[in-house]
Image (tube, rainbow, N blue to C red; front, side, top):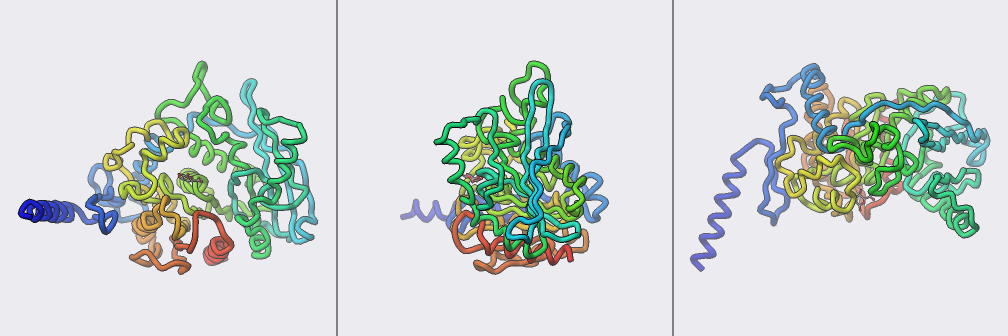
Length: 422
Ligand code: GTR
């Protein structure tokens, strides 16, 4: 008994000590003794206090960005632009006449290697430049809609022409329609630009294929420890698509909204942090390595993600397996890199693997930067109840249900985009 009391007393004193340490102190979980201290957004590495957009942009932003680039996602070790654009299809009478459909190949070449990115574009059938959502899809362009004219992409390794494979590819046509709300998007005056993320870098632990191999130095077979993993490669791909969108007369390049779900939500955040041309970023259920605070260690942890997906991040990120507290950043700082552009973080109530509360807290902490710009960030302090969206410069909602993208999510993104663009 005396032992028990002594033990509880020691734990109590331990928690008190931790709470006295800093101002951004959070407890991960009611029943959890693990406390953590977030690195401070507004104090530079040399201890300087940041209070103006200029101070933020001139050095604090850069030191945070470069830390993420070298230690988490990996730097892109060179430059490569597409050499050719091949228009595969242009139809002014798509989706029953209300949309224009365009399909385009962006062709990248280096030595004997090449990568082809096949874009599927739907735009409202209007004579104005449309704002667009730019988003990767998981299972091929033809999974996004049932439209029989969507070209099925065949990668070189996957060039199986036998009937069985043809049939299985056909079966996926429209298979992911429920995640895309395409009619809502078009009816609200937005376009959708999408591409299978495997086109840029196949999602497997193999660095001999995809875009990585086009930027190797002589004799190199895998990225160096601070160089790009797959997420960084996918983010790079979004920027190259943006290069093309800037030349597309039917699209307003000042209104390109990045959207991504899950691993692609992580990608959207990193792409938005890297490339300032994207005017808005939406991350849906992005979780660990996306919007969720790593130090909470709730749901998926750095060790889990680096074990299950060893190719997603830079090799340097593996140094932080079971070692989150030695990171000089946490994911609220990734969201902050997008400021002052509007950013949306969305969670789902049953998606505990992605740690909804951790996603919310990161969005809340990132709001400090928006305040410096004279903008309202998220505007709330506590995780809201389900299906109650908040649309400041930082948007947030906790949708009821599982890890997914639903019509409810898209309705919020369209309202959010309308609010900031119109
Ligand atoms: C999960 C993974 C998450 C998330 C998700 C996805 O298995 O643990 O980090 O990215 O996959 O992309 O579907």
